[in-house]
Amino acid sequence: MSLNRISASLLSITSIFLFACQATPSSQEASDAILATVQNKSLYLSELDGMFAEDSPAEDSIKIINAYVERWIRKSLLMQEAEKNIPKDLNIDELVRDYRASLVQYTYEQTIVEQELDSIITKRELNEFYEKNKEQYQLDAPIIRCNFIKIPQNAAKLSEIRNLWQANKPENHQNLLDLCNTNATEYLLADSIWYKVDVLAKELPKGTITSNNVGGRKAFTIQDNDFVYFFRLLELVNRKAIAPLSYIEDQAAKVILHRRKVKLLEEKKEELYDQQTNQIKVFPYKPS
Image (cartoon, rainbow, N blue to C red; front, side, top):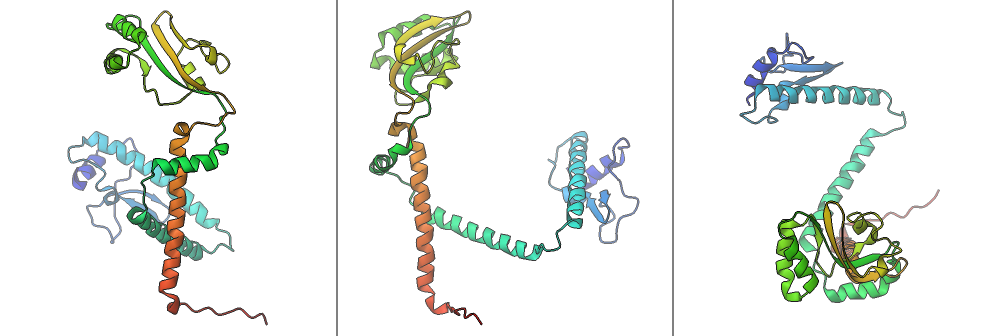
């Protein structure tokens, strides 16, 4: 939507506080309507250019403008109040310089990381990390590997799913997955994934499995008024035990990458230092 079209629409609004200009400052074009002023600051329609699609209805554009102006007024009031209350000992220019330096450095470091960091982590590295650090990964709640299906009692393929579940044959796995995808409300059929017991318990009737009883509930099929639930426990790791690598693998990978990043940036600093030693001068401080 063009500025002229929005401006024309604004002039038809009388129930809102958007201000169509009676006279605009000489620094603005005559066609650039002023929308609001807060003390010595003004908001012009041109500052909102690009916020609207060409085919936007005028009513939608006006709603967007109203909301923007409301936010702008409050932000401007807060900024002006903040400026009046700047501590006398606050050096704004120094803060700006420090922020700019931090931003420039951060941007450059991100460029180095994107271009030079090796993000491939091998199984061997994960295993080595796990063996050295596994004591840090003590579980605060039990976790399980399991198969689970929650399916409405009126599902078209319920009997077929029940038969495949009871057969429990590897060659039927894909067929069972396909049927669950179109019939089940929830299903967990990936044998290698770990779940916290309390998370899974929320999908079952209350008290069916808990941290205390899950070890004794190897396999069952139950139902309530709405659903049939199929559950098969594959493995349990109790609270306070060391988490298996497969459970903390993502966390381990993030730690490994972070360490690589820190090492890469430290090496880059040393490389720059070595390359430009002749450009460095140090003046030892001598107390008077």
